[in-house]
Image (cartoon, rainbow, N blue to C red; front, side):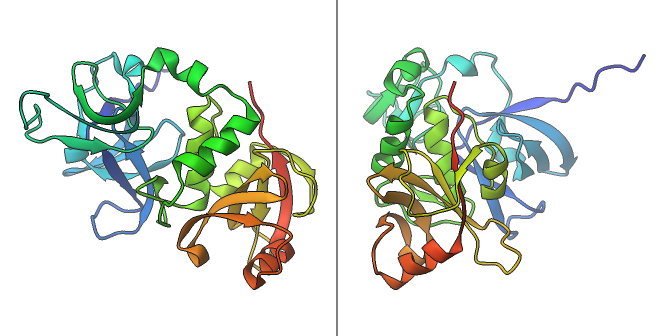
Length: 262
């Protein structure tokens, strides 16, 4: 009988840690890890480690972004966009105060100096798995975010990162990439102008083979929120608009899917 494959784990200690395609800082960003998340170590090359995140997405990050697992991370508070440190000292245990993006978590002994946060135990009541509320979270918490390939926070986010992280706050887990999100949801339409429910996912392709390259989240009333390079970041579109970009999006729609909520 073979012994179980038990791999070591680490906690992300940086506010945001890059996940890269190769073990070198100059390589392209593929995704991001947030403070308080637990990652599984898959491989190591010097100071670089290949990790698998909570969403099973794998990539390389530097060991400096990680620390030993404490064991109580699941109970840590969630940042809704806050700054932590010591109220009576301008320097925290890491040597500085730090800002934390939406979705990052912090040890309970850290003080919140400014901004909003929620206790882990209160997260399900504040962010229930309600489709209308998921759509509202995406539109409000990510409003004004710039487009960043591989980004998952209001500091910079790509299309699938917006969808994944908004849903995650509400207890709905989705994979990282848009095509994977299509596989994890249920088709309901092929028409971008159909009467979609809030949080329905609209998938698009700008390729000849129609492979999914973009995703947006329906808000209801014919509107969609997404993070698009053409818009410079997060934007709300009226899908019946005559804007040339929206007309092109409608033609590129390859399916509309519904989230599977608990």
